[in-house]
Image (cartoon, rainbow, N blue to C red):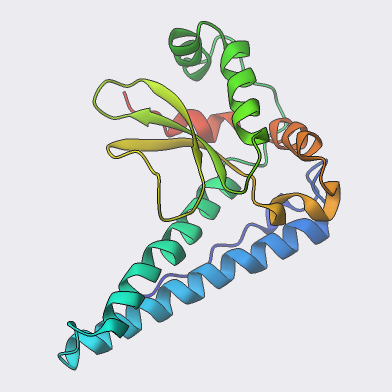
Length: 193
């Protein structure tokens, strides 16, 4: 079954992220969806033709993780944007952050610092499915470094394509715009009980 790119055009008009930046980002995301489908089709054909022991199969299989996670992480990223209200201090999510980090402010400081680190990748707040703990992670590549048994709760893209059109090398300004546009209800809905 083929994947279909989702429409995130409702995000156009967010303060701090230009229409051009968002449209470019949507196009990049659509490429991940297209390439995921191509990789899956190729793998299906190789399986059907009995060519699963080939180097072509191995390379396509390895590439699938990059394309699929690129697709899925962008979906999660876009879906945690579009909010206009600050995080409610009495929300379930805020209480969970305070429980794990001592305060919402401590968590935010660490998350922002994670996103501001040198390099390209993702700043992702994960929830450990075994004990419910929240942990900020830096993920370099789509297909590597994700903590096993954890659910992504808040995703911030910090590859250059997410900010350089609007902010040049001023990543901290992009991070500020990101925080001003978080849809906290979407984030809270990802929490496991």
